[in-house]
Length: 427
Ligand SMILES: [Zn+2]
Image 1 (cartoon, rainbow, N blue to C red):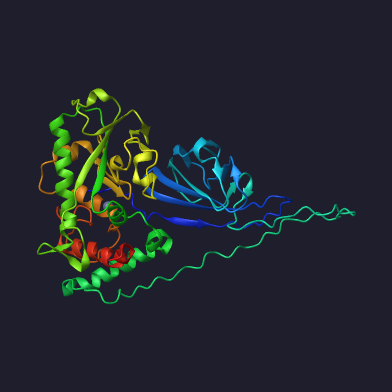
Image 2 (cartoon, protein in one colour):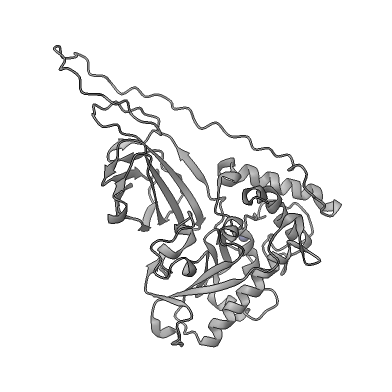
């Protein structure tokens, strides 16, 4: 079965401008913008945008940029008011993030559409000033010049140095046990090398919202919100069966970290509690329960689907703080389980997992919900294998359609992530 996959290594691009603006100003101005395509699928994508104000404090700001090709558009944005005219996009501050102090930053995001390709915008402007990543020279008040300059200074196009590629060591972390079956050592090394070179613009380690990051930020448990992208009704028993299925399937990947019940290579979590804290639906009447065991979000439509409250979502609050989540941090959600009527295959990324509602509900009591397992693998950074095969002839869950359960090779690919990231968590 062909799956559409949303994991693109979450390309996080530092964007630097090619033009130095000379601007007569008494205020220092400067900004830096990072634009990341966090996930992408046929026709759509999600992007996060971080704005850092390097100049004097602002109260009220406007970020502008142009999409490089026609067909790219913002369909739904957050943390700013988003408008688009032609290929030009404007994000104006929301009331709560209007104040942007010196070195202050704010995070925005949007879901978008694309047709032919989805390149990253080349330059950004904050209140009309192009963001170069540095502060424009401050022109202090001086005595009025007695002679008028005859030639106006032209803007000199200078080629900004691109960010030097930080070479990450591809050598194995020292002092680590690394004892996969001998026939898997070389394939595993190829997979890791492939991920390092293709993820996040060649800097896999700079991305900090892998499932691993989310699990450790939440001290070893995971919260879910269900996006019920369906016209079907849901009984309390079905709700509970989804909860039970998420717990059971999630633990299968977590069990890959255990040898005889003990954590491999200083892995700390034997059981990972999975809790469904919310449901998003179009119509409250679809949910046939009246208790308050989960938060219910009604008709908050994003990407043409019900969405759980963004202030409660990890994807939208990667600092791990949820100051605007109505239920507080306890009701935040790390992943979304997005179930769509008639959706073929699946998609997975740091935001969660998506698949067909009919498929998931049909498989909800199965021993292995294989599309879910595959997509959850993406949440934890695992790659797809459409265009190459590290273990020819052997099926595994991350090679779409070739296995219905997590295999030994999947397990060691998963462990390889842990041994490369564990130092982040003091392990
Ligand atoms: Zn996939």
